[in-house]
Amino acid sequence: MFDCNYFWRAVSIWNDGSLRPCCHYDAFRDKSIDNRTLDDDNIQNQSSLQKTRQTVLDGNIPTGCNICETLEKNGVSRSPRKRGYNNSKEYLKTYQAPTDKEKQVLVERNNIEHMNIDLGNTCNYMCVICNPGASHLIAKEQGRKDLSNSSWGDNEEKILSFIRKAENLKSVAIAGGEPFYNINMLNKVLEALIFVKDKCRLHITTNGSKVTTETANLIKQFRRVQIAISVDGTGRYNDFQRWNSNWKDIEKNITNFKEVFGNDVDLEINATISAITLPDLPKLIKWADDNPAIDWMHPSFLVWPDHLQCSILKPEVLQSVSNEIKQIDQSVTKRIIGQQGLTYITDYLENAKSTSEYRKEFDQHFNSLKELRQNFDVYKAFPDLQNNLM
Image: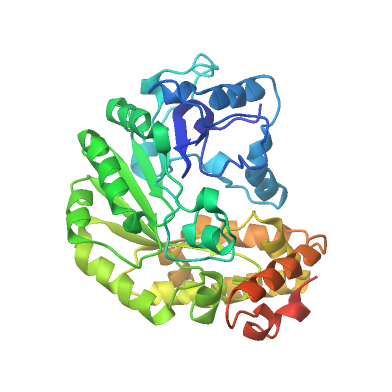
């Protein structure tokens, strides 16, 4: 069985109020399900989730699980499926895997221990790895009026009602869009979760560009909080991939976040590594270790869209970065990414199969963006890139 504790104990809310088993699930690829219809607040048994569970129980792999499939084929032993939704030492002390009795098409509300909650597509960035469903500015750029302001719509009250009743929640991950630019929705969710504040681990992913004292005070009521700031590279690498960002401002904002939250939260870097940013990964690791505000760094290799995966780079480029990371002082890698993080990176880089299959799509993607954005030329920004691609 292609098993995963997300199927039986988790629910993920997308920006438009649709549901999926986890935040990694590719609902765009799995077009066979209607995942937006909510009849009541028993959202854990919405029709699309039932169909996904039935697929697994029938011995098949759900179409939307391609991200974990791809990572595992590239030698990654700790894919999201195998890591699970909560791998903290505290949680794992008492963790028991779902029993066969639990693995049913219909699950109880109190079985749900984890939620991924995306608040809408309001965002001040236009990342090249993103899409109009997660950034209203990209939707505007592409003329997608249907996605100009994604929200949960009619599903909002049913979802909030579920959250208020989900008494066994142990971890919640909140993202966007940009959560701190959708402050009203963020506050609604935090207020709905407040009754589990003493037992729930809260994880918020942000681009780190903004935070208010009011929301910070609400967040600090939770027993354990992790703020993950999305930083994919240093300097031009980050500014190009996370279009509209400014590296100097990001460094200032990270310091500001630490001042606002103090020691009440763990501040980590969430780095999405693409073909654009991979050459800068060793420098990013060293930068994160040198920054006293940062407690941890979580690198993850991009899987979608296909044409931005690191596997479109030549084998010698992947191996060179792997070798460079191995040469970083062990005291640095141990503190900032840990042995598991180091293994995750080197396993991927040494097992990924380079391919030219998506090279044409890569050029089409950046040619179209070049026409839409001023001073946007990927090969001008990174002169070595063209020779490094398959």
